[in-house]
Length: 490
Ligand SMILES: [Zn+2]
Image 1 (cartoon, rainbow, N blue to C red):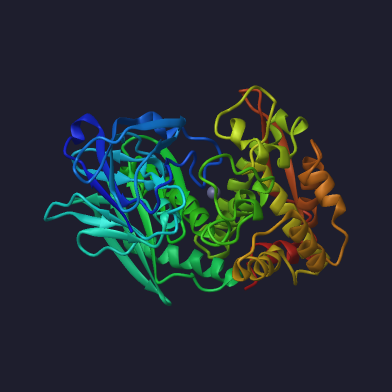
Image 2 (spheres, rainbow, N blue to C red):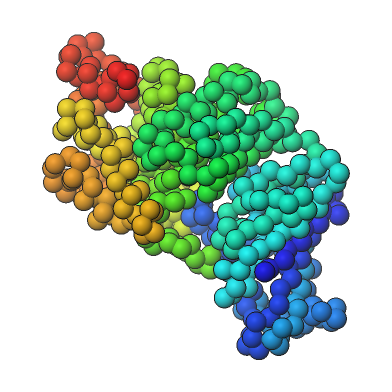
């Protein structure tokens, strides 16, 4: 067992104090590792820059010498069965969905930022003792015994952010075998009953693909801010979503956006947290986990996050087509699509995936991945007269990989697309996944199959507007496919 203890005795200076205690298992050198990145953001993070006052002691309180051997790895010498305590301060002042943040009201910790693990002992259970006042509530996907959170191993600990606060709002609703919790930190105006209904509606659509939510409790951890902000991060049985301004969440635009990000993160429950590229199984926290499959784990998730909302009737057809038009606008205005394939972009999230990057260099796995997913979904619908679609491919892939404790590959994805389309899919991979600058013409063709068109117009900023419109002369066959696509016949 690895024991962690968190204290926030000085929230005003922004530091949280962390202790880790464990027993040495051998006389060999011990290596302590801080994760170099966090799943969900495929770039190196440099969390070690937030650590101050690092020290290591034995059971007598004597300092143990150590050596830093990489930017986030420490080595020390000890003897078997000696008890080792590692202490440090961690600067927690980033209130987004993937970092950690403390102030007088809230202690929000994402363990992957700030908890070390002992090399070779990652499989051991972890206990995290929390700083609790009498009125504090704890929001986390891990079991909580009144004092401590308990994780089965370091992987689970690293995947389990938590809020501690006396000011949390908590709402929940039972959905089948899963209790869905909504926790809110920060000031918010929200129609909670509506949010519960809408969440269940889009969850139902996602469950049609993969089966019932695979947990007994799922937690939405909403961090509401005063400024305009939007960021979400997925976890196995929870998600953290930082949004703002919290006071606007009853306004249709802001509320629809909250639903969009929430639906996206819920879809990740299956698509990345369980079904995962083979190269990320398991995650390696010490270095880059390169994958060229970002169009599956982010692209398909981005596509289905919004599609589930219109299928559920939570979004109107108009809202959905407007949202797609905005995505297409990003696509056609990015010259990077002539320089980089979506595979290149996925590999290179580790280089510049989360910054604008130099002009015309790269594309987004989210936007291009959504377009690639839409094209293949429409292709499957067209080839099968509306009977098959990307849902079937994903359901198969989930069965063949996660449920058999395997990861997926590009080859498997292609094989399943060919199974459900009955066609050779070389064209799709050559142009959409490996190719550069060829996606727009396929998008226009796919949109035409459903009797729609893209209307381009230059706007005042010199950018192309790209509006997705239903053609006036949409044929009956096109209309049928259109309705199939949006699930309007169900
Ligand atoms: Zn995502």
